[in-house]
Length: 574
Image (cartoon, rainbow, N blue to C red; front, top):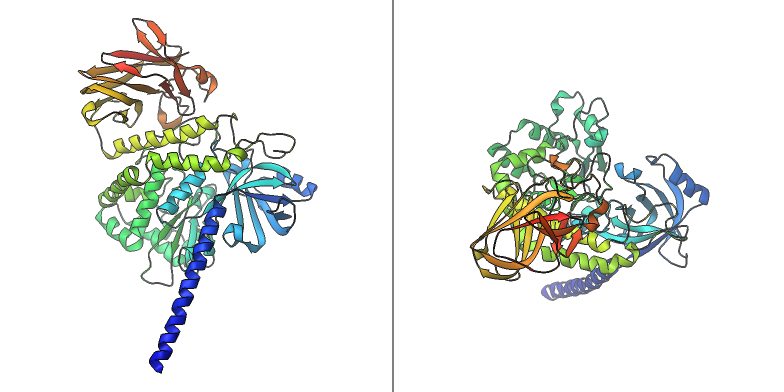
């Protein structure tokens, strides 16, 4: 009888598990389908309250009462609290919002929190979404995200991305202990304080402080009740351990290494140099003595080529991909700087970067991703200011409207050029600056040949139509002051080679970033660049070639295939 009873219990339990699994399958599928749509969120406030929200100090975090619904009919209104969110981005002309419901919401993955990110500096309105999805696609702990159309008192105020709040709910979904230590280093936003002299805790001599826990608690964001002693121990170890074998061994003891490597690799792929000071969270299960630290990504608005420029802030149209692995963006964070200075850790990272570029996050991945997202958001993204749109926010994104194709193309151009840059960073070559040589024996019809110099600058590329005769071919660029447009001349020299295909040339339009020289005749991000064209240049004569131009990525491509079997000079002009 005992065995029969045990059998029946196991049978009932098995049936329960099967039913539960089926239910979860449908729930997951339903959630996936919902996640593919844009959710309309209608927020209602007294007009005087709404005016106050937009007219008061933008850094005021006082929450204001309002009502919200996802019903177009205005029914099912729920009480909420709302304020602006973000730090430096609050000064932009499209505001981001922190919204708190009184009850959990199914469209927020069961959370009460709605983080509406304006992504005003991103004309594609895709970068944050793509970046966060990349972390999820690798199986890392990362916030989920989805699109929302925001209406304030029935006036459309823009397309937004909700990024899931990093809190105990996210930990539970990830299968982690919600009572663990979950903290965010905010030293970088407190640099004005007398006791804070750096942009990160890691590298700070915490032992020189009388009350280290008080200092950290005052300069960290956190959830629940962290074990501050564990944070202090980590800070001491980073400060006192030099890069090298001891750092490698200590890092493995303290961090879940594979996850940290992927986190850092992805940031280097997408060029998010803003992430290393405060745009991440650290977590450890402080109830488990064997637990290791994990790192969680946050805030991906400055990625895929968007960067800060003096006098232009972050909402600018300049293009940048040359974020040096060693020199840029660690913001005083010695946890990462020493990681890169440690041979054993750096080699693991570089191997992983190369694998991800070649096998996972290929150009095709991003092409498919942008097509998928554009099919979802294009109608909302193209809404322009009008009687029923953008009363309080200026428009969906900064800059000139109506160039979505070029904006999305620039995002894909970033991937191509960033990957070539990283390849040069990892695998050094001996070529000169502004000169690159390729061997056609390695290519075939349909391939793309990139001419990338030793510093990682891609001078041009050829989309191969035919290789009639293999051999080496060199592309170089040099200064030529008398060209109207871009003051450079590109020279293609085939060494016994014969090839045909479309030619793309890249130019520099800088203004500060990376200390590079501006090749364009003015300091405008866009200006007259739509009128530029590639031209052949021979004996002082210019023959303009029909060209496709994209000023957002500083490139021009011939519309027709050209034959290259002798030295040829090209310029970019009006």
